[in-house]
Image (tube, rainbow, N blue to C red; front, side):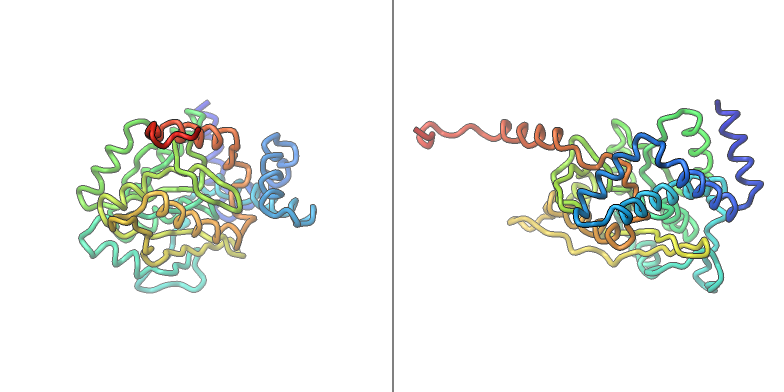
Amino acid sequence: MIVLVRAVFGFLRLLGPERASDLGGALLRGVSPLIPVNRVAYANIRATFPEMPQAEVRRIARGAWENLGRTVAEYAHLKALFDYDYANPDPNGRIEVAGIEHFIALKDDDRPGLIFSAHLGNWELPAICAATYDLETTAVFRAPNDPAIAAVVHEIRSGAMGGLAAAKPGAAFAMQGVLEEGGHLGMLIDQHFTRGVLVPFLGRPALTNPILGKFARRFECPVHGVRVVRLPGRRFRIELTPPLDLPRDAGGEIDVQGAMAMMTAVVEGWVREHPEQWLWMHRRWRPNLIAEEALARYRERPPVSPAFKAT
């Protein structure tokens, strides 16, 4: 299997980045109506935009599949895609960067830092940007389910990015170690996390991994958002936000759930601006699990004193 995967990526390299991206996008866009999980994409879009005409729902869904197909094909050219030069930006280059001053500030402030992102555009590019400008960053990633694909993707990421940390049991200790040494963590926060905190996302409650909120509370470090927008002409714009002013509790410490809600609200704004570039086919909202989580938390509440029990 791994031989076949390497052959496919070798073929994509022969095509060059532009033609590979076009081919990947056209293939997934064309076959998307036949993919069973396309029903998940349609359901998510309709739930988010209930008044949207069916033709627009279809356009967004197919655009999301095209973006995914392009992103997959672009793995074969991942490092070559990033051609941005901070000292001498090329207006005709593939990459433009908004907020590069925040990357530089993170590198020079001698503090740990957190960067959240989402599955928008080609979401691998911010980690390459950080590595290019010597911002010591560890990207937290979830490996593909197929071992052969996971092995090849890991090779590509390792050659183009800085540190990598797989999202698996025990990863939190490695992530904490990065911050204790003054490094930076980058993480995608727009997917379902069963043991997460409930936050509003696109009009519905969603379970979100709270780890960045917990680290922000513990380390009192800057938290930035970064997104990638796919532009016409096979170009990209990377945008890094200023540091967020996260909500705090009565004791003055960062509120973990409030922090994750604020980060998720930023992601929501990004998705609403370019819905055709987000990963709608992911089962982000899972009502049964959310209800079970709420019930479990209710049961974990301290017992009511007998003096205050309802009669």
